[in-house]
Figure 1 (cartoon, rainbow, N blue to C red):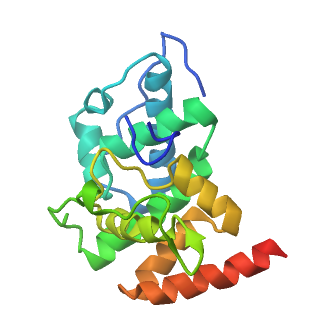
Figure 2: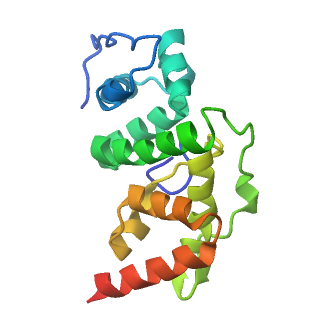
Figure 3: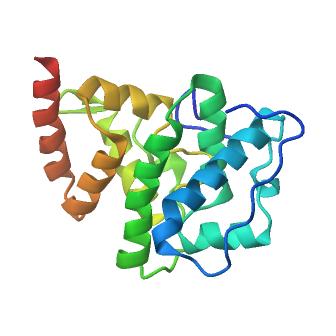
Length: 202
């Protein structure tokens, strides 16, 4: 489950109504509003006991998600952790997905990479670099999130990620943007985290 670590799968009454589907033509200006509607929809359906993300959205909604670099699994993960721990919440989710969306539309020109990260290739959760645990695991996860390459079993900003971000006083979207700026230079991100961590420890 996303709340427990890496892995994944407002309460609404059983009478929860699906919000109006977003327009087939994407409106950039309305992304935050439309994303909020999809987020609330997923949270409501999860609260009703629905556990299959493939059943959360109709074809028009899935088309909208895909046009913005999203998948039903992303919304499912947020909904799952919303109910389990009340985190990361809509605000954090929006900030994260704005960075991912920017990367998708401008770096990837709106085209999925077609690749998925092999979860078995990730460093162990206890691995550390420069004395900072979790960071070796988080770096490739964040890079995969940027590129839309996380498998359904992994969530960016899961419970383990959130512990890391809170410990080092880092906004999850900020870390994602730092990974983007680094252009694959992990050392630049590691040094940035180390500086932030020193300030957070004071």
